[in-house]
Image 1 (tube, rainbow, N blue to C red):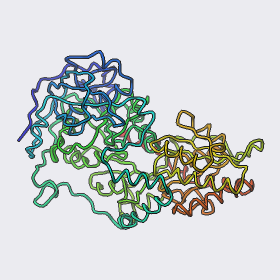
Image 2 (cartoon, one colour; image 1 turned 180 degrees about the horizontal axis):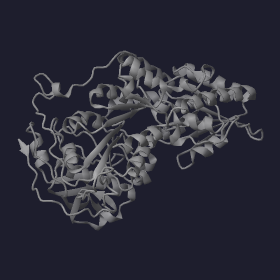
Image 3 (cartoon, helix red, strand yellow; image 1 turned 135 degrees about the vertical axis):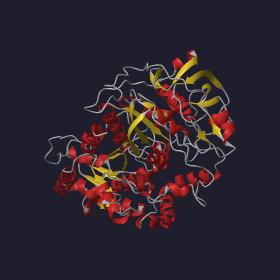
Image 4 (cartoon, helix red, strand yellow; image 1 turned 90 degrees about the vertical axis):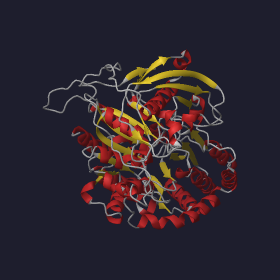
Length: 598
């Protein structure tokens, strides 16, 4: 049964900023400039695809982060059910829950989170779309409703980044207690559990066939493929960018850079995320003027396979000239619909790290290979995995390192000498999350300190594990010799204070902090994970096994604290490897050239 758009009247001209062709798209070089009829409006100083019919002064008191999340959430709902008037209830934050912006419960409000209403808005969409078929009767009341329920989170919660504990999650509670009591043993047990998954990443993965999904026996045999309708005349040129979340991280820094390059090329960036998050980085300058869609999951009942309500509205109202996927499974899942609807639109993704459990986003990239024109990777190791193990045609794989993103020509041509007026300093720089294994750093620091009392440490990072890491540091008796820094301190300041950088991760791609440290004259020791061996020699690598890693990293810390000559030789080896890597065109250079052709 189709859910029909409420009307087909044309929207008035864009009122968000300058909607001339030179700013939002325009014509291709050599063509006559076209008149652009943009569906964009302005609300709370943010691009919106709706007009406000009934406002509330409380909305204007929101912080910049809250404003962007709110407008982005309403954008998502309007694109899902276009050209309608919606009543939007906004609720007070509830505990440490992340914002609820687009998941299925935001349509019917059937959640304990929606307890205390904060304010209410009435909006009318400025976009239209061809009717989307709905095959599941459960979707009909959801999509037919004209009321939406949204919840934001506080800026304090976003800054604190709490480790979220879902009520009633007994299994998670037990696992957290085990981790807290014996962190390294817990890591060992997780590694044993991961062994049953690792075979998947050592052989070719099955490619997705979208058409087969709709045939008898397919995943969507009860649905029907209905591609997006024709493009609205005068639609602004845009590029879709899918991200994991608006949070701190190396992959996110590169994703933000692509958004900047898209905007500088004259396109409207439509930036989508689908990982639940407090989105602390949604206020970054790169997102100024972007159409933001911070989704919350699940969206299975509001997005019909084969019809794709939100995506079809985007494709019919914006002249999408390219699609870029950065760690967004939601957008990977919709690449086949985009290619079926707009086969001429170039699609590209960027991947960094093969996860031990089912391969992670590189595996998603391989499964979506039929619907991707280019696979960008950041390291030779990942390039070899794509072309060798997964048999992606080499001409479709681009290896372009992220060096141009953060590593400038520092002019450093020797290892930075130790400051003999202070203790030898070993630094950790990274998110306080499981992948980065801060517990390994703390344990290695305690072991190194026992062997060499004249070593101090800096642990630079913030994240959901911050309170736990604080307890680990106290429990190891390192409070007097280990300095904690969060992301309010520039990383470069920590590098200036360090004599050695330690990467202790359970898994990695090729870390930006490794490149940055070497560029600043600081040698690096690391666990042998991901593509770290592309830069770090064998003598400075530690096994991935946590107990072996702790012993090896502690020994390396002590060795380089005692032997300045060995420390200098390590840096020289890493600097030579870095120069070889960065001799390739950088990711910035490659992407800027590519997007200019769109």
